[in-house]
Length: 174
Image (cartoon, rainbow, N blue to C red):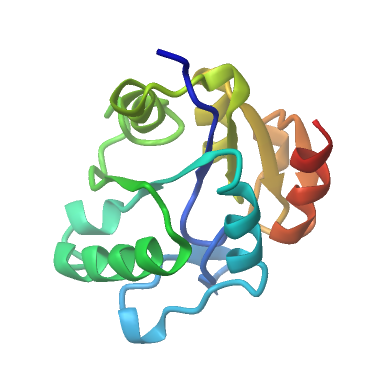
């Protein structure tokens, strides 16, 4: 069976807008306040032609009981349906050593096994250093959407862009 390439997106700050508090991103916990970046639909529609699309997201506020799991699921369902995402992988753990919590590659490698994904032909796209390190550990190409909180010095992305729409210039020409 031939392996497929995939795009692994981080969720908050990558496909949907996030709140910034004290220079740190805060995950949205209310489906009514969900807001997509303007290029999310266009980017996903274009990439879906050649790639299987996934979201891999740390949601430690569920594990620490700051957010209800049902709220994360509601937000994920709306994103999955609107952007036509194959599957969303969540890590609810707030402990550092969980193999699924980014910067560890567990969610990506689980998707690769479940969907027969060729990780060397795949991309991890995110707005934080943890996304990039996770993608690197999984042997994906990586694209960082640079934000004030990205902590670029902690990672070595293959590409850095200013916004989601710019990734099409990279992926389109490879």
